[in-house]
Image (tube, rainbow, N blue to C red; front, side):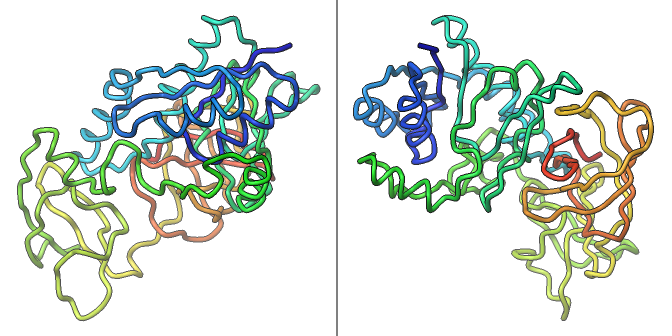
Length: 338
């Protein structure tokens, strides 16, 4: 019987994953990754219901060093990183692999909505987007071939409602538990208050237009992201958006919607997931934020990164977010928007 270490959060996705793996004949060992925010009670209950192994692993130090601190520092410089994209390859999956090595498990697993296939022609594992509304492949763009070689995503391309129905049929206690829509380590999803709670003092500055004219006063750049239009407190008589954050001047540039579009972006720190590093230009569908929208583009390798030129203008993405590129449903790779 093969052993698998499963990230068991206490939600319905990981709970059903545990049930599927157990029914498929795996010896399942559930691991609750403790970040000091929510207790492991639901995860422990699920493990007891299903009769699988269970332990709590404290990852607070790793999360602080590799996700929380870089996240806060980036915000203070007007950059908006995606913490899940940072966490998966640097904290979550390494933690599960360490447990697997310790207990002699061949595989690890999570409740992500994605699939992995082995491509005989290339000799590489491929990360495949889920054929469902819940596809989470974007969040996995930092994974390596070593991880893909031993990870199992039991939910594959199941729809969320199907997952809940299957969990209810199996008598799993968290079948109707609500999904968390927040960043796990930020209470109330309030980035500004979270950053201030870390000891950073908010410093007001100016809202300006593209010509440098002062439009109002902002309460601190950590409270704003590129593309934001709500909560600005500036009366302009028409819709205005945050188009740029200048941390050196402590200024936030506001623009009309027609100024919020770009034809190209630059991407650094590229991780090639399903394909080897590109040496020549190629075409792909590119996602610049976690959504269903993707955009046709040409990707040009430049100095270890990529210059991405879109077929049509797109709404300007935030620096620090992930740009993830696909060939059909195959996630080719991803990097950080510069």
